Amino acid sequence: MSEHSVELREIVKRHGTTLAVDHLSLQVKRGEFFSILGPSGSGKTSTLRLLAGFEEPDQGEILIEGRSMRGVPPNLRPVNLVFQSYALFPHLTVAGNVAFGLEMRGVPRAIIAPEVRSALDMVRLAGKEERIPSQLSGGEQQRVALARALVNRPAVVLLDEPLGALDQQLRQEMQLELKTIQEQVGLTFICVTHHQEEALTMSDRVAVMNHGRLLQIGTPRDVYESPSSEFVAAFIGVSNRLSGRIEMVTGTRCTVRVPDLPAIVARVPPGTPEGALVTLSLRPERVHLSADIKLDGFDNTLQARIHKTIYNGNEIQYLLRLTDGLIWKARVPNLGGDHKQFQAGEAVFVRWQADEGVVLSE
Image (cartoon, rainbow, N blue to C red):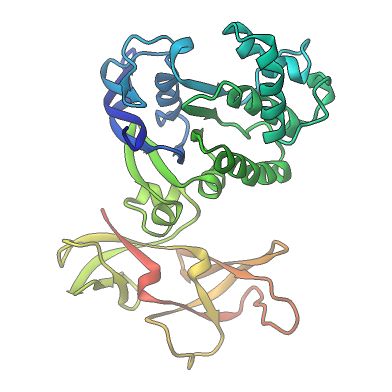
C-alpha cells in the first residue's frame, strides 16, 4: 500500500482562457494534515474541486489511495468535503445531519445510531443530538459538518476554508481543535485556505500556490523561515526587504551591498553567484533593537529612527525609518516592568544575525 493518500500528477485545468491549475504535481502522505495556501485566483479551490470530483482535469491524473479518479463521480470517491458554509440541513437535528450520508448509502439503522454517537463524541457534541443547527453556535455547526464527514470514514477529508465563517477568537480555538481531531482519527485532511496563520498552525505540511502554480511545499517552519521566493516571503507573514547585489560569497554566507547602507551579511542559497541581484528578507520578530552602539554579538547593525510605536497588548510594534524612503517593522514582546520601550523620534540600532535573513534571487 502506498504511503500517499493523494497524488496529483501534472494536473492542468482551464476555465475558458484562464489557466486555473498549471501542471500541478504533489503528494499527500497518509494521515497528514496538508494545507493548500494562496490568494484568490491562485488555483487552490480549483484543486480542491478536482479532488472532490466536481471538475475533471484537462490533463494529468489524480490518484486517491493509489486508485485513479479518472471518470469517478463525486459520490463514489473516498473523500468527504466540509464546506465553509457548513451546508447543514436546517430542518434536521444534529444526529439527523450526521446520519444523512449513512442513510443515503443504505446503512442499516442499527448500525447508524452507534456510528453517529461515535462521530459526535469525536467532535465533543455528545448530548446535543436533538438540537437543530439554528440552536448551535458557529463553532458547534462547524463541528457537526466535520462529524458528518468523519462518520463516512473517508480516506481523505477535504476542508474548504473551514473556519472562514468564525470570528477571530473562535477561529483560533478551532484551529487547534481541528488539528487535535485529525490526529485522533488518523485520517488525511487536505485544507484549502488563504489564511496564513491557519495553515501554519494546523498543518504538517503546506503548499503555497499562486496563478495556478505550486511555488513551495514544506513544513510550516520551512515555508516561513526559508521562503523560496519573494512572493512566498511576502504572502506568509510580514517581511522587511532590502534590494541589493551580492558582493562576495564565502561558503554558506555572502555579503550584500545595498545603496546608502552598510554591507550586510546573510546566508546565501546554493549556486547564487557573486554579482547577482537579490532581495534580503528579514522577519520583524528577528529584528533586535538597542540604544547602545556597543552591544556586541550580532552580524549586522544598521542605524534607524523610531517612526511610530504601536501597542498591541502582547507585543510592541515599531516602524523604523532606515533611510528617507525605507521603513522597516520590528515586533518586540511586551515584557512590561522596566524593559525599555522606544518612543517616536528616538535613534536606535537595528541588529540581526546573518542566518536570520534570507537572500532571494530576483
